[in-house]
Image 1 (cartoon, one colour):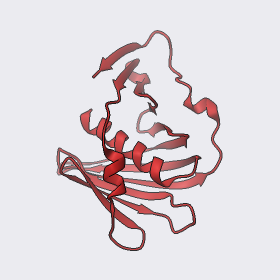
Image 2 (cartoon, helix red, strand yellow):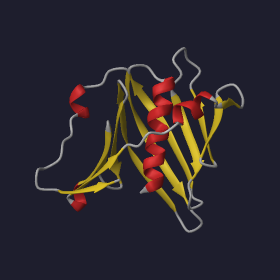
Image 3 (cartoon, helix red, strand yellow):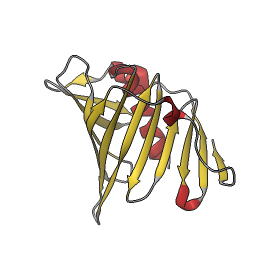
Length: 168
């Protein structure tokens, strides 16, 4: 869970520096370990500093990144609420180094993150990759970008009777 929180902070700050005020896109995520390769699919929505990740395959999960992080897992009937702590990722990303034309790298807590941005006027992330703290190779590819986002996607939307777990 900790790597997810760090990754969400990283993504939130990365998007805050490189994206337009709003967009949506589809994504494919792979996590490659020594034993197996996991595949995930979904959509991401961004507007005014808020992010929503909607995982649709192989199971459903929605993650809202707001003033707090909310992770809703309908199969478990559970919402995990994580308080965002202050972090210095904006400064780290400002120091990101351009490796070549559209590829950049940055470091956070000894771990390197790489991202590839599009060629257009507005730089959109096409691919993000890194190795997590368990040694898994994580790759997220983005496609089918749209410039419009329905504000309702940012509303917390889960049943009243779910278990709520608070993490600090």
